[in-house]
Length: 264
Image (cartoon, rainbow, N blue to C red; front, top):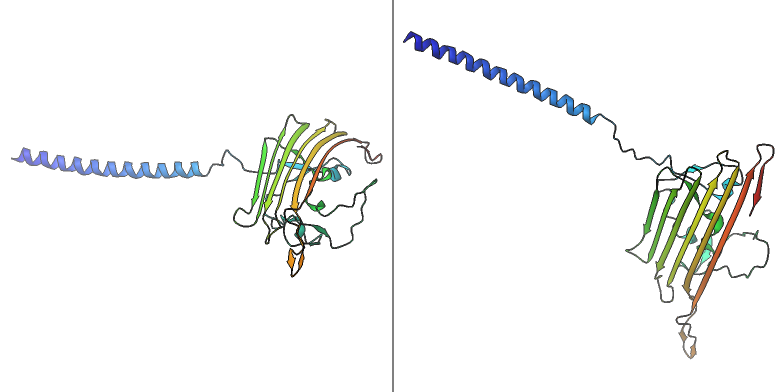
């Protein structure tokens, strides 16, 4: 009988000890797991989302020197997608995107040569001087869309890629379709540009090439169709503007005292 009691007592002591060891091991394992998880969570992500290596230059910037600017990833001035509503360059227009527009303030023309005088749709053109040239370590793409739930539908796409460290190419595409607010205010356009920028290793020589394609189509608006016995019909009358251009610019930087030689 005493032997049985001793065996039961020993078994109880071993059971209690084993439970304590298991609980302690579980607690140690849990704390170790928490510390490992905290260490893993504290690591920096291997994928770094940054735009500081995506930079661009324009023809006007390169006339002053070889330098670039970082792209703007914010929504600054995004609401001014309509070129009619630029607060720094106000306009007089017929009230809908794509209709005839002229500058409210006097803007002297600086171009040389014959000018046709047809400037009603000039604000919507994609000009060779406004093309951006990029420097990107990896392929850069940009999509922008406005509308699709109201009258103005504006879509823009851009792809840029370095062929090598000195040579970059980029393609831009713009498409707009608007119905206006009244009859006879439909407008649509297709615009595209292909650009290339080569820069020598010593940053003294630049070669810029771009080709720009514009196709604008706007309806005539602003006249009455019927007053009493007077009838004036202008239904389906449209103004089309088709403009294609190609530009090549060679720049040679001679230093701070020599300036820049510009060939175009």
